[in-house]
Image 1: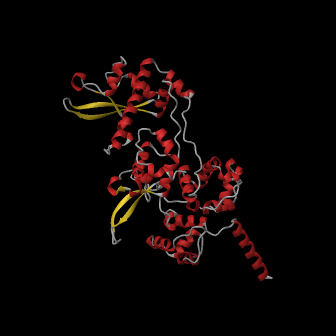
Image 2: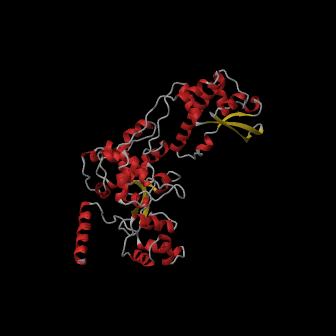
Image 3: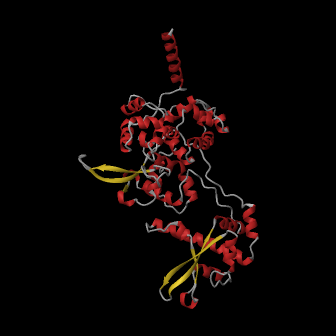
Length: 440
């Protein structure tokens, strides 16, 4: 009888929901956002429905809030409207949770579980839709290994691949979702022995070429340290693409223009370079340097041509191998660069009061500020700091805005402070005592 089948079907669905196998949508689109975007593009409901593959009546239900689309359909809606999923769900950049990332990827729990079980880490953790549902809602996940940060750390790579996002974005979403648990452990990058290719590249050079390459690498490091000091002193810093081009020589008489810092380095090694000779061009042919020229105004010689050299990644690896230094560590995807760590440490050192609104500006906000995104179509910022309004006495109006750590920013500092101190010992970390009592 139809009534009996209907009740059995309902009971089955209720059982699935109870066990977390087919949970109801955890995030819904905001109907007003969907309607506003459609109207902005001049689309009728019928036109949008045709693009998405549903009926116009269903679009009406979505905009009225009577139905919530599935993750896959949310993705099709966003694609049809030429926007990101967050534009329909209201997920603010830098505040994404695991649910947000799954919905943005258009995945159901069942499909995500299937993708994760294709990886060794997923099979070891016996990933299922029920466990993923618990993971996303902050509930305990059954299984001893799920409480092991090493085991969950192994799952982050496959999880990020399934979402189509960087590992650091998956980790941040995990930490926002599982606020009372230790973060999954990821590698921090270790020094490695020089590669045979780098060592062979160094040994293929003659003594003069080796001296050039070694001194250019040292000058590159010195310039990098100078740029870091400028950031600390809040002075303007050019882009790396500019300052990594090191002046080698001026095409004029040394008696008039003097020697560049690189030339002085070479002279101390008893190598005299008149400027852009065969040595640097030989290094360029091997892919170890890039040689360019520009024209500058010299205070005594007027306009003169200048030779610039930039060491390549391959050149740096060859120099490190030849000088007996370990290879540069693999970058840890979840850790910040020295520059961004310095900015985050400044906000953390300001304590709960935060920094003045005008004390933090520039490109760093596109990487760590809530609501920012580096470029159109780029990844959202990590959401470690936020501009928070401070009300005037009596709560009559906003007196000012101050930069403070978000909950994730505080957790990030607590989790990785020791690692950052080892990586970047020159970055000041005084004033972080207020976080010590809450460290995991």
